[in-house]
Amino acid sequence: MNFIEAIVLAIVQGLTEFLPISSSAHLILMPRLLGWADQGLAFDVAVHFGTLLAVLWYFREEVRGILIACLAALVGHTHDRNDARLGWEIVVATLPVVCAGFLFEDFIETELRSPLVIATTTALFGVLLWVADFHKKEISDERNVGFGVALLIGLAQVLALIPGTSRSGITITAALALGLSRGAAARFSFLLSMPAIAGAALLETLELLDSPLPVDWTVMFVGLAAAAVSAYFCIRVFLGAIDRIGMLPFTIYRLLLAGFLFWVFL
Image (tube, rainbow, N blue to C red; front, side, top):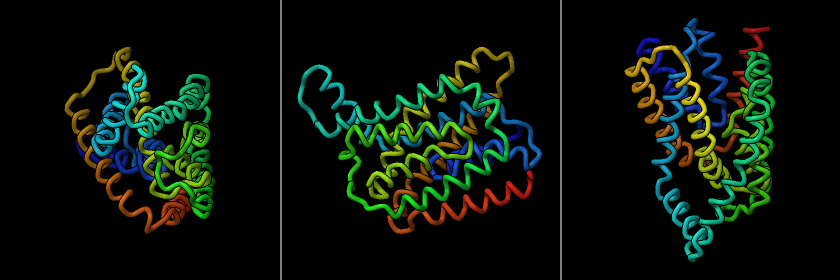
């Protein structure tokens, strides 16, 4: 992989990790469509760490508050109960995808990474995203989600294991359908992304340690930096614009992408 390919793929990862359009679909398909070699496990590790750093930095104040409140609750001290509850809700919402990942990882990796599966999920979940956006909004603050709603969003996140679904897309869809406002849905989705991305990066790192293939550390650093910068920019712009633009532009993009994939691969 040369530097141009690394920068392009890292920027794509950074942008699509948090937009509801599926990062896995783009990273699987771009090398195929452009005739590039597979980016490799080391690069996947780098860009995942890059996007994790971006979301941690953007939500640093919220993360600090959640961690302090949860630690205080564990030792019996009173702190911000809303922050503590939000932290435990994120834990509860993460459990389903952890369990599903261990149970179905091999099947997903071998059976569900075809372009036609990606095209189908891209279209289907794009339409569901648009439909969910019409649901009545009653929760404007992610701190008021509640454990039941958090668990349902976490169960929806399991579907993101299927390439083309989009982790942010399916969690935002579920959150909108369950009554969260656009901003609250996106913020909860991004907070929920932290353990998911960290877990993926950790598993990939463990696989990388067992791999005999050499690692190009310069390319990894370039990928990490480009993914971090593009992801931070994406989060900031998306959260600033989502209440105005809604989900229709992302649905249209997903339908156009799905149509293109069906045209190319059928």
